[in-house]
Length: 156
Image 1: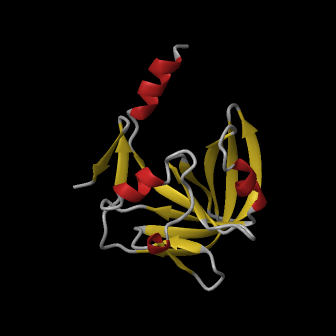
Image 2 (image 1 turned 30 degrees about the horizontal axis):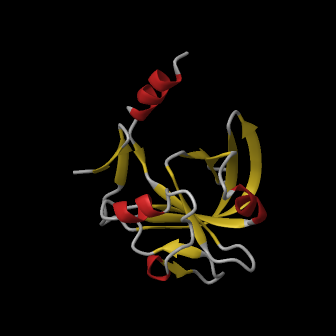
Image 3 (image 1 turned 120 degrees about the horizontal axis):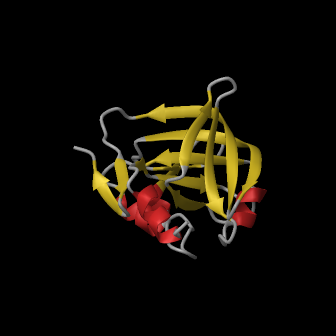
């Protein structure tokens, strides 16, 4: 299997873009851009996302009981790009609001899911994180940010 050909083939599948945010104890709020998101179960309400084992954020992710998956809208490419950079995950104050529990929600995002860590699974060079959804919100007036062929796109 040619890994470059596999990467190219997988990139042909359009995905939405998310920033997962965390509020670790005694540390700044931070976010990670992902496109490895999927719904998993309605009963109980579960979602999943994955993170490379080599990520510098892995220890903090594992230490956080709660997280928020924020689906980005088409005008948030700059936010997606910022939190995709290695070593640049502290949330800018103007990028988020806090919910009643103090968790960070990306301001003006398309949707968000407040989750509690449910399970994690080792999978090759990634860890799959499963979250139990506890709260949701959606703004139907916005359009999603899409990632396809290694580029951001706006849905028409």
